[in-house]
Image (cartoon, rainbow, N blue to C red; front, top):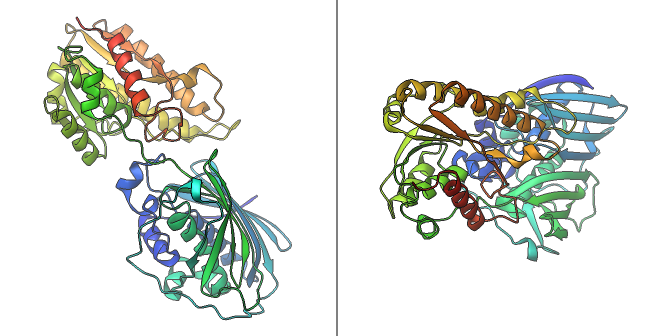
Length: 480
């Protein structure tokens, strides 16, 4: 395939696209809400990427006037702000476009163009863009089968020209508005709030006067709760086709402090002065609660989730002493005065910082992804430990806890970069403690437990996560 060019979709672009399409799902617009999803960050609207790809293609291929067919596979999500590269392959009226980001193929777009636009049989009736949309719906997949509804065809010519100047100039507005309405269906209605857009097939055919000119209608033909998958038929006066989408898991909730204190004896960890790096949610949150419930003094750090860390600390304070919370970005290499002061009497370091655990392409090594894992699991850890050892000296017994993964024990396809980085982190930790005799390390290979990152794990919940972590910490650091 031949490179065409590249582009970036920023947070501002996503805000504008939300107005134009009617898809105001917080996964694309609210960084705080997006942190609590399995993706851990704001993503572009997949259809925005598709429209940008078509726009960039049309910039250098001006002869096309109307779409005939399109098929899109949304293989990987794309983070806002990432550079997106467009590749193309052209055969007659059939075009294959691909979007690549961060070394990974993310979208495959197949297009067929008509020779010319004959114009609509029925004139479209567009709705204006709105700034205050209704909230995203949260339907239950168990009752989705056969559900029928519609999304308005939203159109703002000036905004469309701003976002997609070539597509807006060359393609019929009714076609672009119908395409954009598909993301409104997925992101706002079905599956709605907790949705993932997977596949799209459209055929642009002018229908008779019974069809809608103001909306894109949809009907759920398949709702498979085993895979959280829905397939919807869509149609109006200008297009017909299908959408495949998935219900993604809701953000994971961990056990409350009142529940934790019932599972952990009060004197289990008395004497521990624990620093937990990355404790605003997930396993770090659970470990902080377990240690505090058992009598440890805990200091929590967060990178971006200040409000989450405050909530964890407040929950702990309902049953035990209020823990300190400190901001610390492990990628910066900078310890900071407050964290340095807290190191003076620390006895245990729990290192739980992690990026989003992304899956690579099976059989294809992604060096950028491996490097990202290593920045968190090795570089960030090394910077912290080198500083800590200088503060605590050579006499105090120090304990390092870095959770590893059962992925290292089995051939889990698609996670080669993650597995290699975790192996390297284990090796680094062993080398560190062998060089510094007052340090010990524990790196247990944990099973998949329910956190925001693994919220799709159906057989694990907050009770199991608490049970596993409480038992592990009591076994690793038994009461004196």
